[in-house]
Length: 115
Image (cartoon, rainbow, N blue to C red; front, side):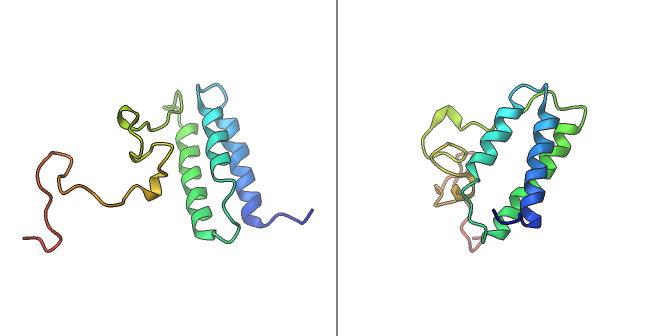
């Protein structure tokens, strides 16, 4: 087997640290494993995405290590709507597709030209 790159070693180290930090916190270990499995198929050439996920994992590790974290949850789509941002069918990075002309308050959105 070939030697691991520096980024691969960092990611594996982050995985171990997240698992250690999540011990004793309900749902943390399962969430960490699921998140890493979800992104395991990323190609090595997608360096920007890998670095982004690594930085995000570092921030989550800081939160887990802080004394305030008692559990690790996940964002759940409202009422399990298929295709909603955060639902299993739609990855969050692709959830910014075409939007309704109504914003979250139900009022018409402002056109791009600002009029």
